[in-house]
Length: 601
Image (cartoon, rainbow, N blue to C red; front, side):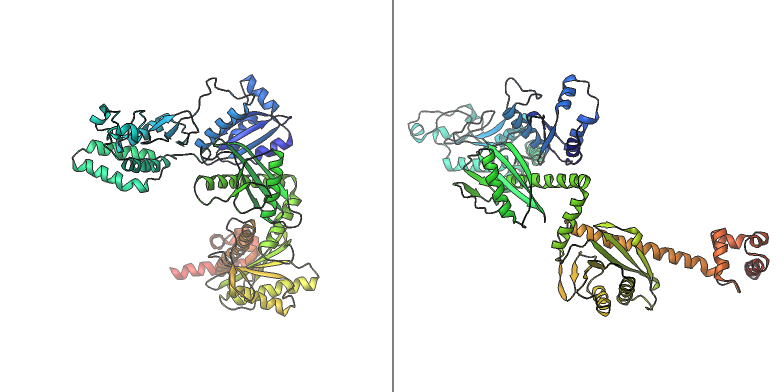
């Protein structure tokens, strides 16, 4: 397996979708669907295949491409469309070319509602396709139970009805039809039923809820509980099913869909082609920004290039925002419905492609990955230069005991643990976070200036406006105000505070800048808490030993190094103590504990 192919597989998303295998000539040789794209595609290259044809297929795979979708059902439908369109060499093609079923509301007076596998462009409405005939039959059975629709194929024009050409059939006498053929039901009443049926097929039950509840209550009042229960069961079964697919919609034909997402250095644009209501093509590419081009500029360039490359003559395009492409093309910016969902699907494919590319870059070109992150942080945090060197401060104290502080250092977005520093608070009495922050920041940068060390491009203070103001005071005293960017991050809502600006900045919760900032803050907190905990623990252990008269710190350290705890020192006999600290000091320690025991007695 070549390196490029290995990278493509490593960075596939763990989402439902369709994967496509291409050979060295860039010819599509296989299309498959997957509940988990990464897991399914990886299995081709990690398992031993019994089938000779599968081994030949794997040998010929040179490139893997994929299209993410919302559900497994969508993946099944999209796979079917692509196989029929391209007829890949290694895919099984059904000889009868069996297609998935649809529900049709026929374009006619008093429309019929029925299942069909043929989509005819006669103005009728088609819903689907469905992957389960059982689901369609259950839906049609529900419709039949709720509404009295005709099943005959008569041409119910006004002229023929007025001349009395037709007579009601057995369905009328059974109560399954209201007899529009003899003008016993008005066209308006019948079309109201069709409107409600259309909503139910789409999965929009709200508008029909009152009618359905009334029907159920009516059956219950008539003591017809079995009928009421049957309707309830069918509604429960259908409400959990996605009644229609956003992948295929017969009302959308010959349309190009474009979208883009971007970061500071690159744009990622996606193209989806829809023909006869089906996705038949998808292409995503990365565009490197040269002069900080806007998304609009990049997308216009992409649309022009793609339409030329694929010789597209689609009269309409769907895009997320207004573009000017200088062609006689209708530009639609969908706001709701199926068209909006198709644009969202295009954006999702662009997003997954971006993530895939970033993962590959991180492996193959770490320098470019760092440059991208730094450029993004500079833009997001409104800095004058890239924050290649960042330092973050955090205070730790519990009820004012053993106050300490921590400083962690990140270089190129990664921890530089050898440069981490702990600080014991010296000039502050009690739990005063503001004064502690002022002391630690002053000590840190006073030393860096004295030793001629490099200063960071960014300082992060764990806390809100109070801690930030305290840190800024120290920078002013040292003459560093304005020379180093400094911000505070508050824990509750992750607000970013700037000096002299009362309004905080809120970063996108999913942005890499916020994630790195949170990582710095959490690392400083962890480092400080560990130091604080160790100091308190050591203090508690030493407190009892320090009460022994005429025993110094060095003797206590020697005892703890040997016996590990004050309890074991207490339990040691005189000979064990003499072997560690000599006769005179051993007697003082031994007598201290044993005299205490004697007093207790």
